[in-house]
Length: 151
Image 1 (spheres, rainbow, N blue to C red):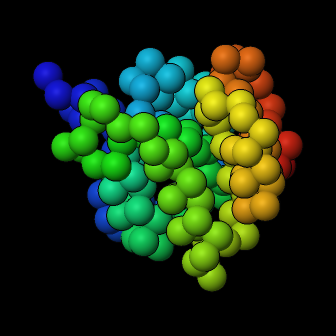
Image 2 (spheres, rainbow, N blue to C red):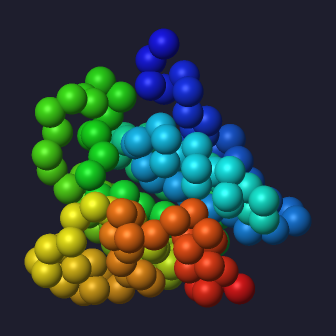
């Protein structure tokens, strides 16, 4: 079974803002973390998942409305390139978000295992709401951070 069959993803235009609550875009490629975060977040929000840069950009270009974006920095560029990637593809997505008039003001929480001063500084310059080192938090913390920024 391929990685994509285990992850609920959205195609272009497939979701509208949840009428009764928060709509979160989760950009993460690790299946275990996707399942953990979805389980925690779907208690109070609609969650759309992208597991690579290509899918994330497609979803972002679809004009679906998101209240907050949770963004991993190290994700594959596409479904076809899941092995051997080293680039911080998440920064490409962050640059796209901040460069888009309609998306630029959405709070972005960076969730990563990278804890370099350089990465933190780049994220700060891109006005991220929060920079989280995943190994230092549990799903309950993620919920608290989301609620902190969107109410």
